[in-house]
Length: 208
Image (cartoon, rainbow, N blue to C red; front, top):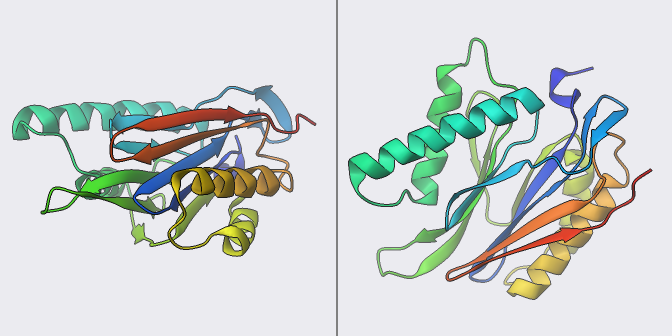
């Protein structure tokens, strides 16, 4: 067994037309033993950025606090809010610092990136546990159900999905994928970001 699968959990981020969504399951377990059904793996960084942290549960808490500290320091020093692309670089460098004794987390980043013209475009990225960045134009996945998430998302995702269609697509992808993975599931939380608001919805899933 890989230490990445010890507590289970999966995260997916998906791009739509002028919107982006990120979803995770809510299960916390120790291998096949279930412990909690309300474990948060997605955290707000700013009003326009969310980060998902699937992996070892203790490192989820540690890295969340680490990112919170570094983002606050950036905001104080730069006197402006961090952008998603900059935050992705911060995540990458934070993980690479610890490459010889890494955090067992594969972060997924979703946000609305401000363009030079003042508009916003969706941004998603993911890294491995030593910070190698993967940028995508459709979706990124991480966690124990990542193989299943890839398969379902490939079949359901389309270009230029509106906010409600994107929510439906990411919800169906997550619910169907975690049903086929014993280490993920027990409900899903979805965060949908547009340029002016964030919608958070919690979905019921199978509890067996």
